Image (tube, rainbow, N blue to C red; front, top):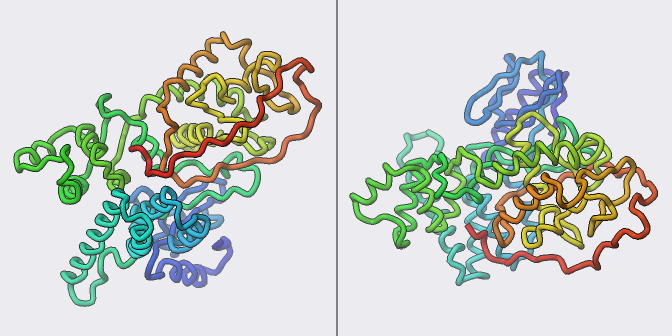
Length: 429
């Protein structure tokens, strides 16, 4: 939904009002200012003062004269319908992830519908039963709050309502350079941190008290969860990383999104240097995979948020694969395209595809940056981490063809190997 800047205010108010008045789901908006800057948040109002977005819980007003366009994303219902159509009924992993996403965005009625069918198909899966219990508890709490509310007052968390902005699934349709690039949201950054953080490193972690309440209520049978009154009081006073350690031990995945990790995990601390020294200066350069000729593999050079750009590029590199291998191969680090494509063609087991203007970054496999990047890949978690994140890898324009740059004697790529299929269980953490 797109509202042109010249739309009469009374009509714009009606349009936005109808969208916000939808009884089941809240709307998220993407606001573009006339100077080209963009902002994303929950649309609170569109009045004579301008457009008000709730960004990270804080209402921000943008003056009417500064606003170019306001684009409303799909509702949770619309996103759910589209995503569910792409998932097979017996795909446990993806259906669990979708139901978890509904739970995270407070679409409890939809989550309850999904989990009921999953219980029929996967009656012995413990994680499905735990998620069902969490959904039932939320709906029970909403019902109790509604009964306790004053007459005529709206019930908190009305059926399927999203009280925070929905995370829109990026849908790039061409070159996605500059401000068009779909950077990670803060929630997606936090998800990476949660799945890679090590409590032993004592990171800064914030665990809300209501998350601890749910942990005590739903996971009291888990040995790691405190039971006695004194133990539970001590647990509430413990550092956040110690509380997170217990949440991990209980595999209370529905609680993860409510926990905030404030420090980078070790893999991202190390990757930060690799991005600065190698990725942005070579494969992610503006004339290569960070520009309009990026073709099917494209990286972010968008500086709206250095933190979100860092995590977005890490995820793109980590997820990218084709029939021959991975950009980051944790099982066979030396075969990673991230390394092979930076070598001279006559030294690479898999030379970079021939494109105009290509030159190697490394002098040889003995290059200091090559070895540092290889050691970083070798130190990543095995088996491959499977992050519970909905994100479509962006694409760019097709590059101009050029004669092969590698000499005729250069080694040819190995024969295609079978695609590595992840197990159909829930994420390891």
